[in-house]
Length: 287
Ligand SMILES: C[S@@+](CC[C@H](N)C(=O)[O-])C[C@H]1O[C@@H](n2cnc3c(N)ncnc32)[C@H](O)[C@@H]1O
Image (cartoon, rainbow, N blue to C red; front, side, top):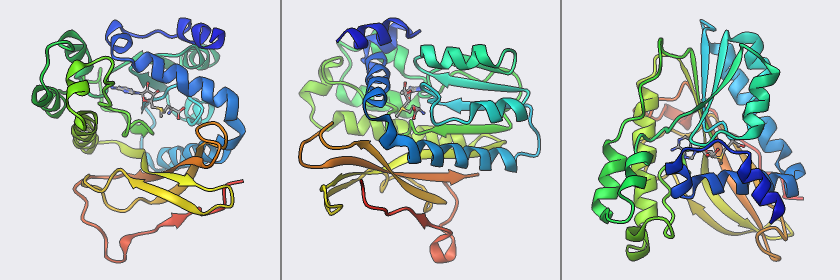
């Protein structure tokens, strides 16, 4: 409880993000990492590797934009700071960890509070009166604030795709009254985010949750919930597992695992290549 309070106190978050529960989400992620971080190591390493692969494909190294940077654990900040003139860690909530990364790389890394959906401030303002259909169309139509200056040479969507537009039923009454509204808003926000990413002219890296798995202690799959099947995405270039909540963090009976995909230079309108493209799968048992 004390840890939660201290972590929340160190966040810089707009009022809208607090009102919608997004600041609390980032605090919860940080605290979970403090408890089970060793189980995340391979996921964080895989994310950093894919981001560096994207950086290597850039023809220019002016600036890099990392969206959903959070605490920056999955971002190779030092390496990006060496390669790019400026690396921007953008998130709806700026954490103390992200600010420390900026302080350690003065003039090369900055934190930017930035709403990737463009809808959060208005949703917070109308949260008590907005209807279900208005909430969905808000996420469909809103645009994020324009980027300052030139287009980034590298844009990374850092595992926030499934988080965008996830509205909390205790923050938005319409979500309490309409089961499934949170998922519809998340879907609309994810589609808009993919469209926005596709319009960027630099190298694009998308890292996002593909599915949620419940995995038994002996490694058997008990349940799988796919997340991306309705989104216009070709098969990912990399797939790995993130042991998000090992036993007993979420349940005494199963590990809660995310299957994560990464797309490099992705375009949502890319046709699926013949043969399905390279698909590297990390299927190891959960230890
Ligand atoms: C699963 S976390 C990933 C964080 C970080 N990349 C990591 O793995 O530690 C999702 C991130 O998306 C951010 N996020 C959620 N909604 C956002 C929005 N509308 N705009 C920008 N970032 C958002 C959250 O604050 C959180 O840091």
